[in-house]
Amino acid sequence: MNKSSKQSYRPTTMAPKAMITTPHYLASQAGLNVLQEGGNAVEAAIAAASTIGVVYPHMNGVGGDNFWLVYNKKKNELKALNSSGRSGEKASISFYKNQGYKKIPSRGALSANTVPGAVAGWEKAFQYSQAQMKGTFGWDQLLQTSIQYAKDGFPVTPSQEYWTNVNQDPYDNEFRHLQRFSEFQRIFTKSSGLAYRAGELMKQHDLALTLEGIASEGSSYLYQGELAKAISQGLQHHGGLLTYQDFRNHRSDWVDPISVRYRGYQVYNVPPNSQGFASLSILNIINNFDLSTIEEGSADYYHVLTEATKRAFSDRDQYLTDPDFSHIPLDELLSVKRGMDLADSIDFTRVKNVQKQLDPKGDTIWLGVVDQEGNAVSLIQSIYHEFGSGIIPKGTGIVLQNRGSFFSLDENHINSLQPKKRTYHTLNPAMLFKNDEPYLVYGTMGGEGQPQTQAALVTRILDYDFPIQAAIEAPRWLYGRTWGASSNSLKLEGRIDQDVVRDLQSRGHEVEILDDFTDVMGHAGAIKIDQNTGVKFGGADPRGDGAALGF
Image (tube, rainbow, N blue to C red):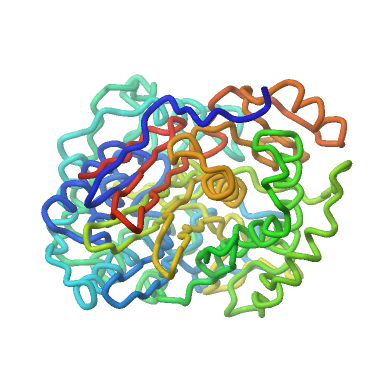
């Protein structure tokens, strides 16, 4: 039996008025409380995003970045918000090369070379909600749940226990061994040096104080106040780059979403420096194939999506960077003609060989919200690798991201490091419209996996009519590499039929079989809106710790 089952282990959540899905149930609950008290989608997203930054600290938080898609029902307007931070004014290729580095370190103070944009994103979205969406919640109200969990504690997830243990490998100073950073060890391990076990209560006293400051003073507390000084001084003490002025200079930008047609629907994502155009490019290629003639879950299905991914990534890797530093021909890359040309180059009997090693990481959270007015948010937030840089400036509780470690130290590389530049970013939230209104709000964590999993969700829901939860649970694939691997492979979940695996191998795919459900595939989520009845259908990924909740 080749086909993925349309059955799911847990039911699709259905609700008549509003829906939220996040990869942590406590964050979903925080957002639902706001929705039930009459809050809008943006307000619920802020409550959930701030909460998940506390209860899923290895994946995201105050020290990271975020990107938003915000749909304003009253104005019938979709806006995109880029709240990724730029590199510091002192961040230069020569700075690293003079210290003997051939690449930017993956961990430590030198990997924390970009300003964290997440909190500025929350506030910018909040201001829009107040001005344009009749927001009723106070800023400080929306942060109360996050403060409470930081102060009083939350039960640690198996995911956090697992990643804390993985990251204490004393023999891997490039990617692991985070206990060498004193604040990481103090906060994320117990006095014995062991990780908190799943179910044990963890408190983050310093982070609670930081969040209380942000709640009372707004984002200026982080970007202009004493906190900015404490972070920059803490980093410089460890040889880091970011200055107080870098924090003062941060700004988040409203930008126009980018879009392609797929099967008569309009699919939206965020523009560069996000890889959103790669997610759209895959669909733009697949749009040229009649999937009704390709069985879902067959070797042809996995083959065509993997081959489309390789072509979309090839375009992405040639052009993706900060558009302020380099022209990116998006109209051409997302044109109908480009989609057709790339589709024509796909051979069903053999693979296209790609030399470039794909980046294996991207520990992130995606969340989606639809409120009772019909407003919608697709939001993605991350500190890049799990626990980011590993650096937590003393007294702040803030895990600083290492997103800037993705910059290249080759001055000819499209994503070369320069001062005040945004790096190539894997984060990309998605939304799909039917009849000029949101029909599907969706996204996932997982670096290179994000465009691939988005394509899985869209094809399974639209082309194969999977229920939302079944589409999320169905066996997934990931083309790319994992930690330490020197080449890309096609990773398949173990539930995929052996005949399909052999068929893919015969076409030249280097197949790697993983567990039946593995979070290597990311934590996906989706909300579908029935435009006739208003009923929302929500799903959350069993590979994560999330829940779709509605009322």
